[in-house]
Length: 293
Image: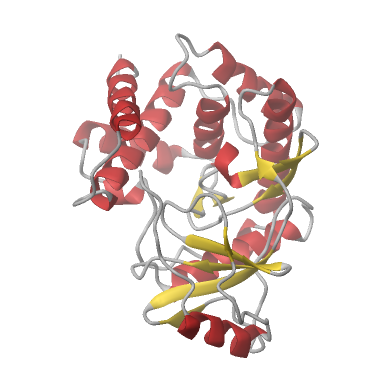
């Protein structure tokens, strides 16, 4: 999926300078990534410009999850409140937020050490957010998340997901998009967890399945051996989610794949996809079907 080309305009720079006292007099440095939001480094901070369809209320809620996690988890990167205590302002219809800049490079989900660290970090994250779950009400209505926007695409899967959620032992805040692209490393070790826009209240088993799929290279591997190794590492680290059985793992991964495919299809309308994008999309569809059985 192509990265957005939203610019750090003069109007946004002036608004950021006023709200945060940040010297954003130049165009900043566009950072790598950004399928939905554009991110610019401005000195020791990062200015993040989201899509217009993301509401202020849902982002403030997501940011509160990040701030709660950061109270006990050093890797969790929270937003910086402005002079009024808000973490989101709207400029020209878009949500804008400011974050500390963290030096690092994208995590490598093929690296065994980083896989183990990711499982341990996810276990700590679920422990902390699970203990604080009484603090958070439902996510405010807004643009939704990847999976919620795909409801209705597969009625049979929807029925299974509703039963899974109804029978869950509890729900708690989860990051919602825990994969290598939202983790930064230095010297081969994870130092930061970013991008909380997909945060939701959910049984933690959902995120365990999703993260295990990502770090177990489930999309491209011939089997799920590495996926199950991630689950085991998470449990060894004290993660509170129950290990999923085979049907639960496959169904939750299919939920995620369906959501991602639907989301990309919607976001890419009118955009010419690259051969790499088309190949990736085809592989997602193949694995979605393979996991059905």
